[in-house]
Length: 409
Image 1 (cartoon, rainbow, N blue to C red):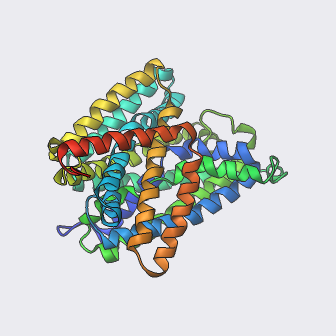
Image 2: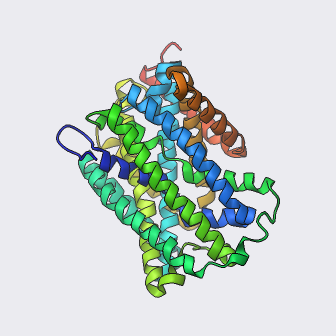
């Protein structure tokens, strides 16, 4: 594999960036929730979403090769449909990061608090530390961010493999029966829950311009990342059913397989894994949001001052601090912010895959069409949270008009 050098981002760090973007704090809780919803049949939801995820990843790889620019999904939508949909798409991605970073950090923080004690104050302190670390890494530039993510990705994959391998000796065959205790429709419910764990393939599209040879390197990076994600996700799904059926209502279910195999050191390893699962995606998404803000400012779809490299970081830091304070005092909750952020992300998938059906040719165009149908289906189950991307689109297009990017449209 290629390495990062003076000519651009290499395959190895790019693979780590992708793994970090897709493997998020959802694996800390979602496998248990899916097993609770559908029983052992939840593994079918994992397998189905992995197949769908491959189609989505292939679509973004093809789009990234065709348009290897910092604007990522927004640039694809602009090429296909024009400036107004592109502005909305860019704002969805940016606001999804701004809204999602604080609750994602807090999820990891609660695992730290589970180990150390101290409840919410400890969780908030851990979340703040992780946010500051991610912002600091990105303030150091792309090379620092990629290097940090490479180390995080390797350690994270190792810890999750340890969790899976050490849990399996405690597996019980009886946990697999009945296979579908809540009926086959429940598999769809589990898939809807698990979709939150498959958002992330679009994040590194904003960094495609960093590759020295995107046409060759980007598909290789995505393929390698998908292989890692597939092994870890299926392993966690099987371990959750085989070991944890009786403990799926735990607030820290990933701690159970680690502790069953390693004892008290497993709890420490779980807290470390939680930090990595949280810090990794935040690091990648902040990098992508910063690149996107610069590209959109250049097109006057965002205020001109956001083109300054550290200005988007300041915005993310300020909003994150305010939202963490609201989370700490209970005025907002983690689930609501995560759902709003996720709905914005799925909206990005809808317009980007739609762009793929117009910009791509041959078999990959068919793949893009299948991806579009999937994400529209998922978006339809967002309920009241559809208000989040709707409000962001209205605000973003209005600001774009004020900036002159879409004036007269």
